[in-house]
Image: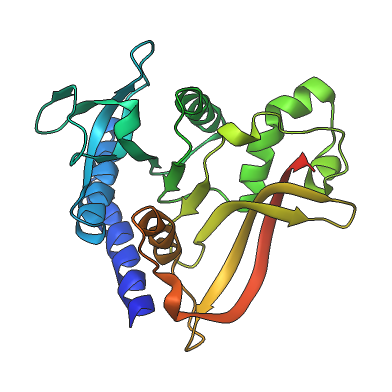
Length: 255
């Protein structure tokens, strides 16, 4: 029942974004804000009430983040430094997680997002996530990761895809803990993990196709919520079965 609930919830999120696109709205900022609102509203229903959710900024007293699409924060023990109905400025120690939301993402925007995550990491925020409604393929994201390094070190696409290139993603710790693609029939959740290649073991991202105990595929939204809920001591994966398939891997860092 849980698997079907999250599958329907994921379809609802995606279909609502499709609905607004039928009006031929050309203003990307409006579409992006709607996509963020959809996920924020859904998280407010799915996360415990002690989790407050808003968009806004994070400061450590010395520096301030770029505007974050979704900030999950502890409002029971910490007060926002500034708050309106739609925006907050938060002290860094109140932040539980940050989620950047994209309708889709190209190479330039991908690297801009990684820079934003790098700043958040420097401020001490580890739980960073990238949520994409209609993501490029895992293969394309892999090319995004190494596009700049490929230019600098002249690694071939074969070296990147097989993990043979003499490179390490030195800022691995700054990267999002998971990348979610919501698109039905093409959905995936890339999670930081060991990546076993034919040549060596590395750290990077893996995507598993999980099944529940009735052998039905688990929605990536359910996997994502399972990650978020563990921050509140809630274990969602009790209905997961033992069946899974290795889907794709992105090797980034040589162990």
